[in-house]
Length: 187
Image (cartoon, rainbow, N blue to C red; front, side):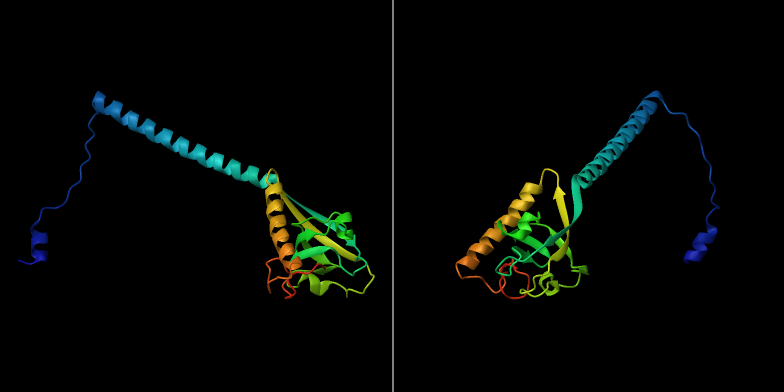
């Protein structure tokens, strides 16, 4: 026989809902399952809320400030900054840059009113013989309780690069240069 013939010979479907009262043991188990599920949901929601609070605390403990400083070149024409792209890797302790408060880790985002976005720091500087002061806008981000670790790691990288430079073994790209191929000389 064909499937259609078999289906045609079956009785019509009927639906009937029967309500049967639960026994006491069934009620007790049902209530326990509901209570367990609600408690699990509450624990998940509390854990999620705690994660969100932790994220908010972490965001609140990170502070970014913007600074504007004016620096002058030293007698040798250098600013006293070692740069990696537009980030200050280290500051010569005796330089004008150190005197005005520039720190390792600062991001230079503007030089004499020109954005460093899409440009390198060194390309925006006036020539090394120019006596004109240089106005820098900086962004400094510090994480409460962790700034020393971040600054320390930047300083360690700068120290290794400086030692390689002094030893005359600066690689073509020391990781602390400004990308212009000179190994990151002081600016």
